[in-house]
Image 1: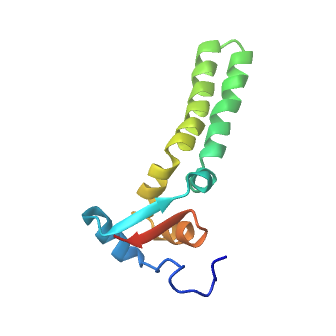
Image 2: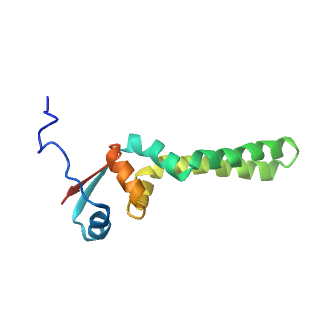
Image 3: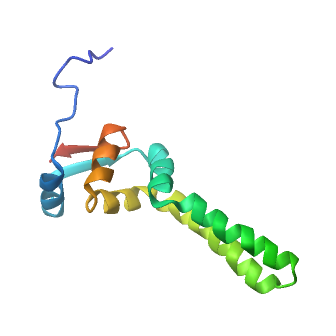
Length: 117
């Protein structure tokens, strides 16, 4: 069992500015946990409330007789959630290179690990 106090077992902390400036040059290796990335990205992009805001009125419009418009709204909500689910690691990396708070939160919660290349 690894010792939590072992300094070789822990990843080195990389400041945001250094990460953002060095990533395009291949100075860092980024490891994203896909299982944790999906809920993290969904929370930080507010994808679930937006999807529900599309699906709810879509169902209402379909029930009121506007089936095509309702189906488009429902499909947009479902596709938004699918997009976030399938592209969560890419979205996370995009957000982490632009927003310091997301980079810090992802690194702190184990969603993303950054190592020197």
